[in-house]
Length: 262
Image 1 (cartoon, rainbow, N blue to C red):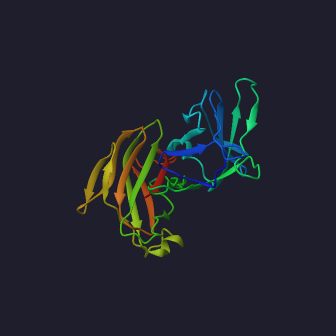
Image 2 (image 1 turned 180 degrees about the vertical axis):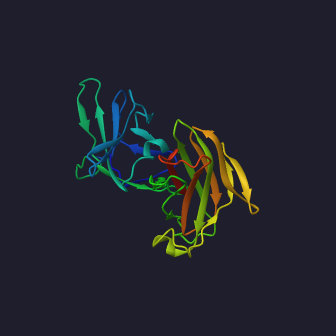
Image 3 (image 1 turned 90 degrees about the vertical axis):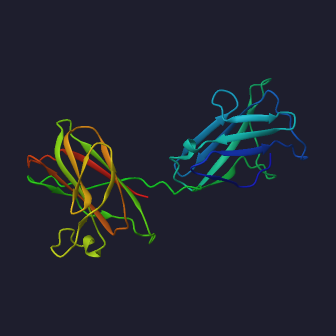
């Protein structure tokens, strides 16, 4: 089998076609063979993906006589892979001998080929940022400033925040604030820094309160389960203010906030 670099893409299913040939470039009959495909990460020292036409699945023998097979890598196989370059290797096991043999990938009898893993037709996945919440306040909690992700200078951006509450429940307000003032990175509490409440588009459980004609306050009553909110806008920085009705936020009834912009 002779094969050049394989290029695959995240976010979609990938089907790779292979033809088995001998040293004379003639088709190899693979009838009854167990064929195994492995995607390898030398940097991590792991086998990232394994497929076969026996127990695991993922390999289809399209035409055994002509040595034509396909290897299917679905988008979930690739979702956690972070490196751009991987190696692949194929082995075959002859049912008559039970011996596993290497499949050469080129005329130099190399046992590996190269896979280039690229971002696909959808925006690249970005992990959420865990917001830093102070624990030394007894009235309200204001998080540190986090990047609003305006690096691409895009005309619009969609933001999501996810809130985790203690089992004791939370009654009070959560405000999402934003600014386009770069001083936010120097001192997020500077008195001359203009923070404004963002327009909340959606929430799972909160009652969204309108203040100054802006739907900007997430109001909760005895909230114990995870909730979220969505908002749009291009900002330099974003922060969150947690203000319980009873005024006691030590420890904070909001145990964690995850933020991500798309």
